[in-house]
Structures are given as C-alpha cells and as structure tokens.
Image 1 (cartoon, rainbow, N blue to C red):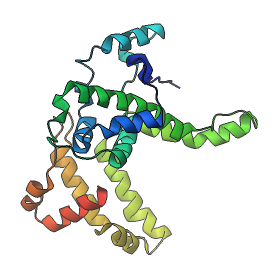
Image 2 (cartoon, one colour; image 1 turned 60 degrees about the vertical axis):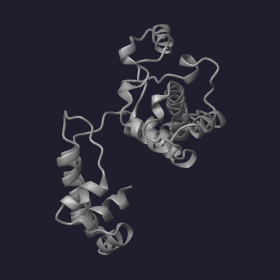
Image 3 (spheres, rainbow, N blue to C red; image 1 turned 90 degrees about the vertical axis):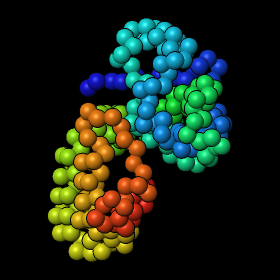
Image 4 (cartoon, rainbow, N blue to C red; image 1 turned 90 degrees about the horizontal axis):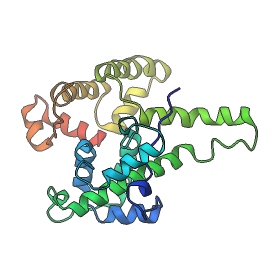
Length: 238
C-alpha cells in the first residue's frame, strides 16, 4: 500500500501551529466565497510564496522529491470548506480579496492546518494498540476507507453516475419500497430527475481535460427545459 505524507503548516510557515484556535482565527480573516472559489483553483496557490523554499527543504529532509509530497488533497479541501462555512463571511470586495498577498498567505496556512484537522477527525485514536492488534485492525477499517476516499484521485465521473443510478434506482427501492417518496421528500426532486440534472452538469460543466467552469444558477437555469427543476436540484446538493 502506498503511504502518503502531508505537509505540516509549521514546516512552511514557522511559528504557526495546527491548533483549532489558530485555524478558526485564520478563517475569520478570509472571505467565504473567495475561499470556496480558490479551493477549486489550488494549483495556482503557493507558486508565488517565498515559503516554497521551506516546502522544498521539508521534502528533502524526508528523502522525498517535492513532486511526491501531497500539499493539497480532496479530504483536506472538503474539511476546509466545512469549517469555512462556519467561520468565514463574505467580505467587502469579495471576488478580489485574494489579490491581497496576505489573504493568500492566510489561505495557504489554513489549507495546511486543515490537513491536521482532517487527520484528527478521520483517525482519532483508532490506531491505538492498547486493546491489542486485532481490535486495532477492526477499528481502523472505517478510518482507512475514509482516508482513501479523501486522499485518492476521484474516479471517472460517468462511471460514478452509472453506479449511483443502479444503487438508487434499482437496489434501494427493492430494499425499501418507500425509498423514492422519502428521497423526493428530502430533496425536492425525484431520483430520475436527480440523475438527469447530474448528467447535464457533468456533460456541460465537468468535461475531462477542460478548464474548471463556474456555474451560475441565475444564468444557467433559464437556458434549460426545466429551470425550476435545476434550481431545486442545486439547492438540494448545495
């Protein structure tokens, strides 16, 4: 099994510790919408920071080439999004706040701390050997699965959509005849409409090897055959 290593914040930003008070303080300095946007554009972050030197030194100290160390990964970014929703607000000038180098610096620090926050939430004390190796193995199965989910490259989108269709349109209704009505009550759309909307989004906005596209509901929905359906769907998945 390949073992990954993520970069501690104090290796790149000396003096910054990965504690919750520091983490939430950093988030309070950032504008919510810009944080969400830049979580999707991380390949542009850190490239202009002087701290990239410390990053190279960290990699060398651990005998790892820089291109084999994971600075950003899915679980970390989702963790950052969750906490940003709690501790960030939209600031004046939202959309341009990351033009300030200090905002980008705070964002990079928050990203690296999010790795530790994610790791503590996923693993906790599940790897403890206090009650024996066998108990630790059983206890670690869930965290290892969640870790793989959060750190591996996502699978092919069309395949995921097909698996979801089989699961929620074929298997779940056989287990629970009320599943369709429960799903529609919770989401506001039927399972069929749910997958129709996902298919449309993947086809138009998540094409492989294309530039990331920002979806604006106020301009996209009116161009569809069922604008109200797309609004309800996006409200549900958001």
